[in-house]
Image (cartoon, rainbow, N blue to C red; front, side, top):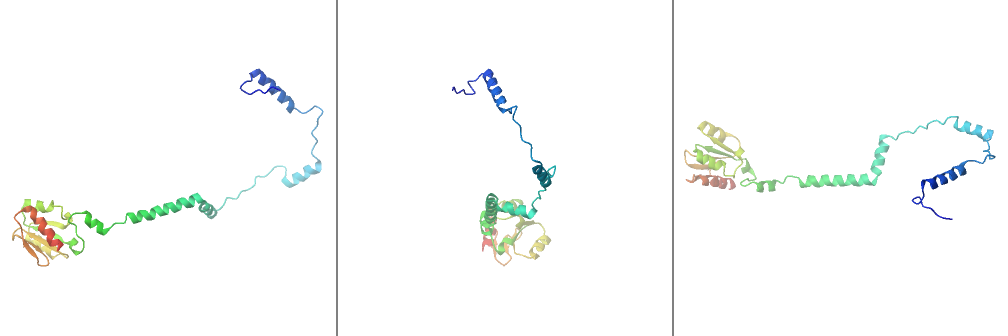
Length: 197
């Protein structure tokens, strides 16, 4: 018997094979399929009815669905990894007060960090030199031009350093004072020294 692969066959040969297969599927003319016995047919109808009814499938409740979701290893592993990342991020992004003070030049910690620096009766170049020195937070620097404004700032709660251009001195609220230097860039250095002490 010769084996023929589908690639080697021509359409005519395929047609012949198809006809042979169709003949093999046809029942023999004298062959009869026996009928189903009546008692079996009645028993099946009684058990299943004439038409098969669609079975009702009850959907699982929300609690059962959540329980099956948490039971899956992939979901549990992903949830654990997500919680771990959240905890690590909260620890890493926690602000460090000591590190924050070191990041800004001239920023101090403790009670002196709330000290108001009052610039009274300074000329424009002196005020600009202190403001642009980079030692102080601009919220702590307060240029004033009148004695009433000066007294208002001194009477407020908290510490203050007065850079007084009229008297030529730099005075801390606790009584320490130094003479104001002639060089404008040295004014900010002296104020920073008074803050540090």
